[in-house]
Length: 139
Image 1: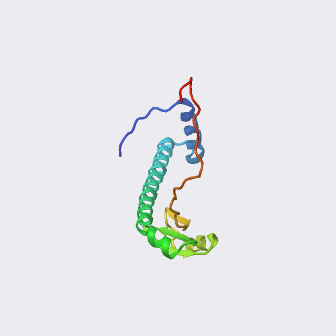
Image 2: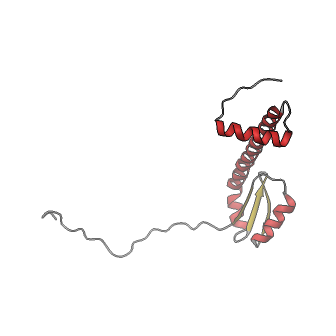
Image 3: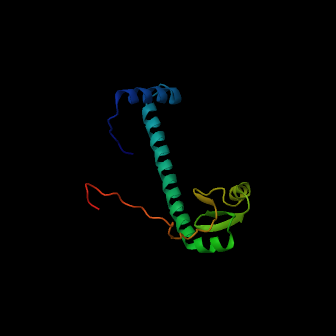
């Protein structure tokens, strides 16, 4: 067991005391129990966000690897990528959401998107030119 000292503003300190005494009663150690619970929640949330971030990176990398195949095979369909892998494709958004909820309900991050092929940009002339006006007597 260790001791941690911290400075917090007066308003936050009052709220902490009120909440701690309501939840744990007016007993010795109520503040310590409240702070311990708050720190545990904060650490758990931070770990969850780390997991979600790593899954996000996995899913984005999987998309980059599968992009050409998806455009070839699933053009116009909705696709689900989760846990770093292609999971399924469906014709409607509602269908793919149902699949996501059944096949990967515990995924922290999912990619669901409609596949469309990128159109290559074409360059061409418009058939007219801009004529610049002379400035201060020069042409």
